[in-house]
Amino acid sequence: MEIKEYKNYKEAEIRRLYTEVGWIAYTENMPVLEQGYKNSLLVLAAYERDELLGIIRVVGDGFTIVFIQDILVFPGAQRKGVGTALLKAVLERYPDVRQIELTTDNTPETVAFYKSLGFSELSETGCCGFMRC
Image 1 (spheres, rainbow, N blue to C red):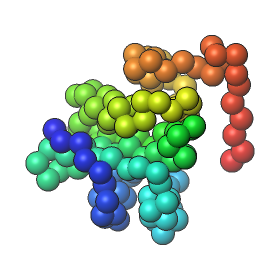
Image 2: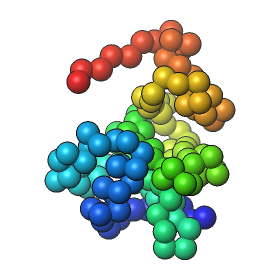
Image 3: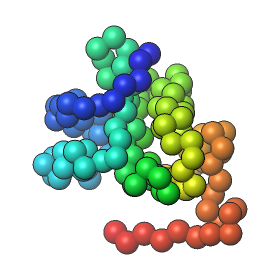
């Protein structure tokens, strides 16, 4: 597996990835998603040969805050270290950033995954989070 910057947005593969993981709200307006990609701080992709396995997309300033906006892995590649490799690649890029944040589904599997990589729930740090949808 190779992790590299995702510089050439390919709508068909991004649509397929988001659709296969069930994030169809994003695919309802592909031009907006493309702009999100183009305006991201960093997008990394995991590849096996030329096959896309997963994506991680980061927004923020890269100095004081990094927000992991998306981390998606094709269902057939899940639980094989792809998500871990993508997340570790981001953490290695921003070792001195004070806040690296993300939001995720509140399931035992996702909570365990992020905790295994050193993340804490906001409530464990004396903070709370808010979202306006």
